[in-house]
Amino acid sequence: MGSRTEFSPQTLSVLATLCEQPSVWQHGYALARQTGLKSGTLYPILIRLADRGLVEACWQDEPVPGRPRRHLYRLTPGGAASATAALAEAELAGAELAGAELAKAGSASTKARPGASPRRGRGVAAPAVP
Image 1 (cartoon, rainbow, N blue to C red):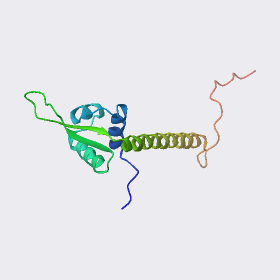
Image 2 (cartoon, rainbow, N blue to C red):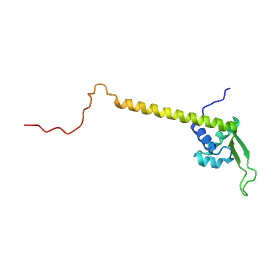
Image 3 (cartoon, rainbow, N blue to C red):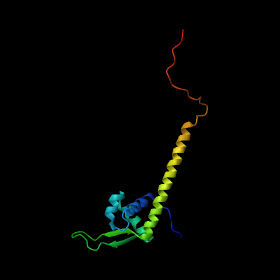
Image 4 (cartoon, rainbow, N blue to C red):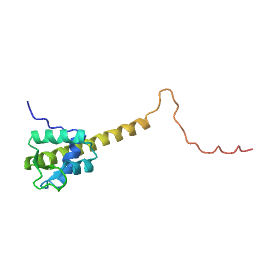
């Protein structure tokens, strides 16, 4: 089975957040706050990225007293390269889509309706000359 190169918008959001500081360990709660994703979406994404070798995960060494240990995440070197490429590809695809929609909107506004007469200026009628 070949590796999938496309990522969902949610996964791209996680990758973009991790790319901001690729070598820094981040916990899931901070990632959830930064991406706006709920835990039911975020953690499966992190697990899939870890399974693919794009993200590495570890347990927090010294937990804050009174809190449970947390999982920490960061991009692997290969993950950083894949994330950068995927984000650039998504940005390019978004720009192409926006350009196509703009061109489509422009051509739609210049098309005449079938059977309609062309519009002329809407100025004030000139007064009748006696």
